[in-house]
Length: 134
Image (cartoon, one colour):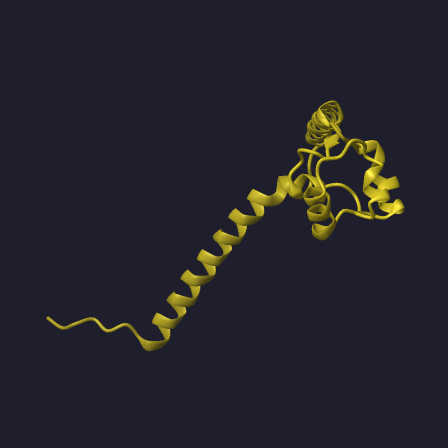
């Protein structure tokens, strides 16, 4: 018995045909899977719009609640007991100013800060409604 030998041209032809069929099937599968995402039906568009509207409404409500909570809990900073980090959180107060304020304690009133030249009058005007001396 002899070994059957495929003609050289036939092997290449069969491989090309198999490759083309495999590529064709793969292309059809990918095209079929993505067809609906490129051309959504009117019902899909309505559903997507309704979902986006619900999400936007929930996000807006959460943002408003966060702002309200922030405003409720936002209190004035007591310059006699605040940490330097709390003082630095005030507008216009840098690290040096926060340390000058902390080192100059205690204060009877907040207007001592510009009178004692710890911060400028402009800086004080920016934070005067946000600080207390207790």
